[in-house]
Image: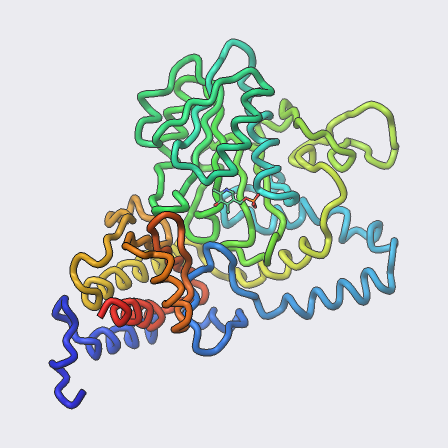
Length: 409
Ligand SMILES: *Cc1c(COP(=O)(O)O)cnc(C)c1O
């Protein structure tokens, strides 16, 4: 180590140079201080916030208060004092700015899978009769495909698995619904939400966007791009906690006609009238089903405080800088040919992760984790690294790449 050039990385950059650059980038990063809003174990580089976001600092105390005071002491009164019953809409409005939605269109509850079911059947009903096809991202996260298959069967549609790049050509007057992921969970490819939504609307189809891998990582602009329906989870980039409730966005212009396939009593116009007939509530509330999971929901509400004063545009800028820098460090440290990025190099097509294809990916990831760099593995051969700008810095990116280099070195 006495001769620094002896330690030169394959790409030519020396670790000392990249480490110095990382330190400079962290020192000038306006978002760096946000890391204090999270509790993270010392010595760990956490690049799996796209699977399970880190724990925001206020959540444990808030949950303890909800359990001991709101549940333990106030008991049933907590339902009626206004904070529990209205939590799905209140928290929906709280996260709405992150997805570019005006208030009143987003309701929190249930899982992403369940909300997808509501959205897809609701979309088929909005599209009306005479249309026969549901175009579904061919590379989708599995649950979306499974749910789409069932929703299509129930509504008399045929699922057509379609590469998002082929959607414009596949669209026709017979298309009822288009289900797309904003970002591909495996490759980190960002799909063109504005253009694909416009194309779908040109033939009168209803769009359903899954935002699981984009919300909290980059601007989504649901209202600005006239998306019809959207769903997403809150335990990835939104840090809501394991199994935190998901959300359903119903654009204001569709709310009156949105006909949920799961018309539970929480979505009723007058739930406590206990009437035998269903009358949907106005607004996004009709997307509710049954009694909300209050503990998870209020944990999410507290977790969203981590976003106070944070602009999603600044998050996007840092995310791109982080993934650029990580790719540069990987090129410098990892022997040529050992890994291949399957994440698009162009910013316009990149979400907030880097996926590297390699042989023995499962074993490589296990080794990385044992060395304190936590990403994840996706079958059959992908190493996934999620970059969450609220708590990941440039030194983390450098160390992750350097550790990967050591494993191959
Ligand atoms: C994470 C993820 C889900 C998760 O669905 P759950 O119902 O919360 O288990 C669904 N779709 C996509 C695209 C995801 O990335």
